[in-house]
Amino acid sequence: MMRLDHLPNQRPDEHVILFLRRQWFALLTIATAVILLNGVPILLGWFYLDQTQTLFSRPIIGPALAIVASMYFLSIWLFAFLEVTDYYLDTWIVTNERIINIEQEGLFNRTASELDLAAVQDVTAEIRGFLQTVFTYGNVFVQTAGERERFHFKNIDNPEQVKEKINALVEEDKRRLSAMGAGGRGKIKSVIK
Amino acid sequence: MPFDLPQISIPIGVLLFVFAAYMVFYVLYSLFNIYHLIRYGVYGFGLYVLVTVFTGGTIILVSASIFFLMEYDWTLPISFQNTADFYNNDLFPRL
Image (cartoon, rainbow over all chains, first blue to last red; front, side, top):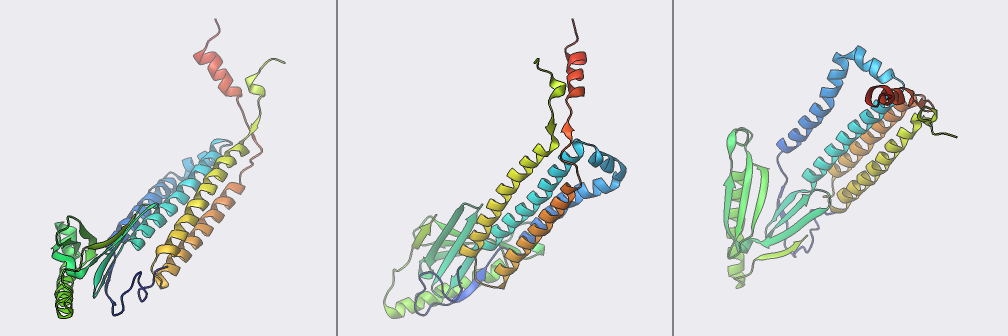
């Protein structure tokens, strides 16, 4: 279990500035899918109540349908839990010294990487489409100096504010390093897959 | 003794093996997912809420399924009588 006050490889004066997950709209999408997948068969069963009761009371088809129905509703619950877990474990942590990117892809793939703020060359915020504009969520891309890789904060809340905050932290970190005479530090530190 | 399809008697309880196999998969997958959450999740109230809600929901759904399935008589045999007639008369008529 990770603690925000005790990050992996935490540096002496390091503290968390931003802790980001995808916006709540991602959870709304999961909830809508679950409601539809549960609601449609229940409504159909209720609408055609006589036929449904007849079908479920037949000697062989009835028990077989009962098993299929049980497996169907349990599968939806499991699917919802997997999606919420994926949402919950996808996190981006911005500290006063680095950015940590943790992404869960399905149940068996996990990527954790970090980069020093001093290595950040460009930060881009992107809001595209009607929904992202109305609910003010979108993507932030963090491009590192001299590296092809870039961090992608997906569907986060208020991407413009996050971009401004990261830019301010990068400037602050660069000033701090210049004062210490330790320029040139940076690059993506580690990638664990 | 000659082979006679209508005399074969399989209780519909065999369908419960399919359900049991599914439940094994469900439990293993759920436990692995909970382990993932506890191992990699961020310490906080949300983590406990998530695990508790999922576990609670699973207990309710599994209990409802078991009560629903208990209403049936699983000892009834699956009849092949009509199936055999169907094959004999409609698909493979006597020459």
